[in-house]
Amino acid sequence: MIGVLSDSHDNVNAIKRAVSLFRDAGCRLVIHAGDFVAPFAAQELAAAGCPVKAVFGNCDGEKEGLRTVIFAFGEIREAPLILIDNGLRILVCHSHFRLMEYAGSGKYDVVIFGHTHKPEIKREQKTLIINPGEAGGWVTGKATVALLDIKTRKAEIVSL
Image 1 (cartoon, rainbow, N blue to C red):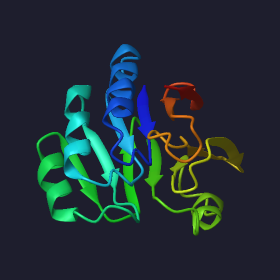
Image 2: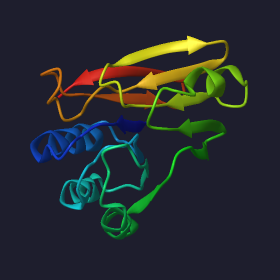
Image 3: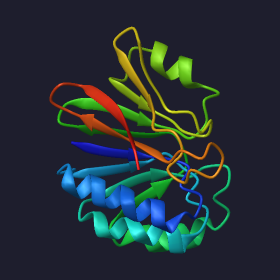
Image 4: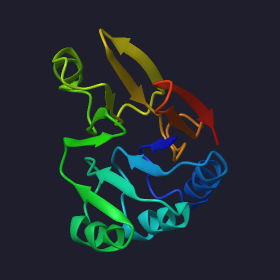
């Protein structure tokens, strides 16, 4: 199981709830699709007890601080981040601007993005597209994340 979140925007309590959910679900990897905002918030993901892979979002101004904090339990880089997990080719980005280009390329099994704060799971040909919504819950009033089952290649949105 992979835990997926985005747009946590310094909401430490929501991040703690997400970490608890990911631990309970047995996640062995957490993916954050950008907009932690500050390093103190990103530090909360260390408690997930598994590696964290992340990309920068448009609100992540303290990039060096985020790199330093996350280095202890994972990595963060400019998007897109491409990784292979159990044979799944996963692309992680923050914005939706090149989403259909990535999904329509046929190169990726899963494309994960954030930025819109709207949870969404859909398919484009063979590619599963996941937006976990906003973990922070500041814009919509609903804090959400996603769980990706790598065996079934299905995902679900979960409210925090």
